[in-house]
Length: 502
Length: 128
Image (tube, rainbow over all chains, first blue to last red; front, side, top):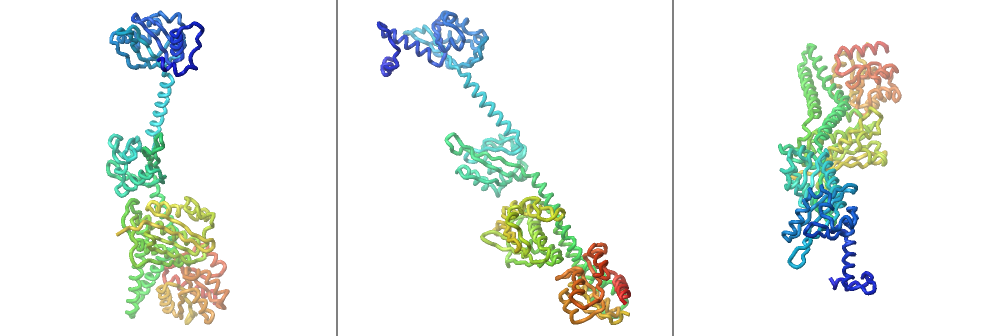
């Protein structure tokens, strides 16, 4: 104690002349007790207050006169005494000689704001005997309020997370699930306790597990990631399309300690898109109806006339045979047109994905569309490689992409022209290109052509959905669609799809 | 009246040409068939005919437009009958062309033989 004081001469309280060094220490002791930010009470064996520091007196709105020498039971309000059992605890310390570890006390007294103390009772020994105990009270009201506030924020956030319509999942840095909100439970069918500790990637569709792992890995490494659609596998085994948006969770040092993944269930949107795709396709078929009717009426007219020739008696067997052949040929041609049309119009399940040859797909689609093109004096030139170009996808949807691109090209060539449909492999991708010799797209509109409802044609002459549907379908197939155009010269749409390795 | 009359048939569908050629030949006409508007206009610059049957949708030109070009680009004054699987009789294109005299009659495909023969007779009786 002496050493400690010796090092700080300048802070010595002033001594008046003749004051002893002992008196000086007492003064220092009182000053320390007076300024310490704790409430201190010295209590004797009869449970009377021997000494109280200023902090205690101020907080309790008491005076030295009504406190020093008073019993503990007179100084503390009854409600505090009965709740904390303070007196028996003090007695225990006198009896055992061991300190009472910290406990919490809520100090309520009339006319004083309620305070919360963390208190302990420490024996003060004089030789072998415990003559006094010291009651040390730390005012933790503000800390308690802070903790309460933090809990409220926590509860608030938890409610937000729990009541969110989106899946909210957090993982540690290794991708193991830490939290799983109610929407995640509802959508996946798995309860939080069933998935906690499992890898989020393991709940994803087989083919996309590595994508999820890679996304988490990149976030942990500090890179940004984009929205990504990865299907979850529900507890019944069904696939749920989910659009994931993932962000890193940073600790106090700025290190990534985990990942929070917010996922939007796309099931309803997919169903809605399917519906729109089909409506749009039927609308496109309506556009083609004129061409198809014209195409169909020619063989019908030939068969009809040939039959009428046969009604007239004739000796010319060669002519009769020719008529019969024309009838058969006409009926076959008509059937083929109807068959193509039906195959095209029939909706196929939107989620059916398989290996398909883009050359076959393009040949079929051009076959259905060429009557319409011919009507508009548009020549469709086809450029295909000798070998199949295989991709993984839904025939119906990809056919729709090509149909929309060709019809779009035709709509911008009112004076006739040429459409080139090309399929080829390029730089590891499958490429479909549809070029036209139409009026082109102005640079201002170039960015907007894939926006829904964007159209430069008059109302009633197109929904403005065709190209936006192409964009959606191509994205769903993991591909890219882009447009190059020069005003007055024509446009080229390029669709790139991942090539299927066979 | 129609015996030996030269008829020009313009249709890009060879079998339709075959039908009209057989039908008209059986009824005493002399028939020439052309597969495109361009070929028909060329032919008309060096030949004449008394009647023209035109398909509405040719590979190189619309049937109605061809009828107009025949009047402008050639000396031919023969009546033109539009034979089409694309238009209906009440389509405005057909009605306008009938009203302004670009075409003399309209027949839809497929047709009964008497329909087209009646139309031809009606057109020729007006003309003569």
